[in-house]
Length: 135
Image (cartoon, rainbow, N blue to C red; front, side):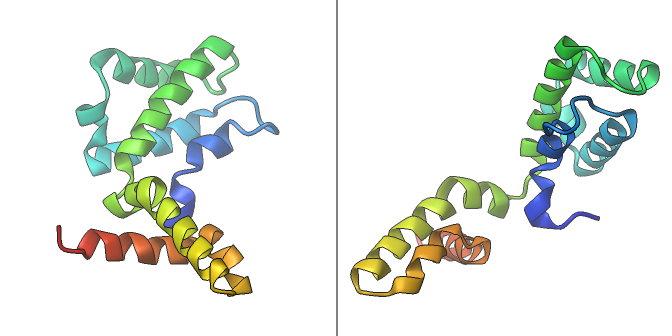
């Protein structure tokens, strides 16, 4: 099982420069996770679900650039929908908060604060603090 930090990069790993095609077993794994989390029917249209299902049935390895582009957009859509609220807010809010905190600490003379903006644990901490703050 993948940890939470690497779940969002599944599609990026599938389409990395070293490998230029999607494999059936990778698509099946994403579909299974989407079904478990309820995103399969909630997020995808009937046509998108049909494209993924047909690809799984017919193709072992996706070679067509057009089909690969279509599948990558559908699978990315699924991955984003399956992210937890904390992960989504870390991406949208936490990074900005960490950069601001880092800059403030640097102006106060803290030299190690340069690394704060890139530290995923610090970003997660600030995100959760922000989530629990009164409105």
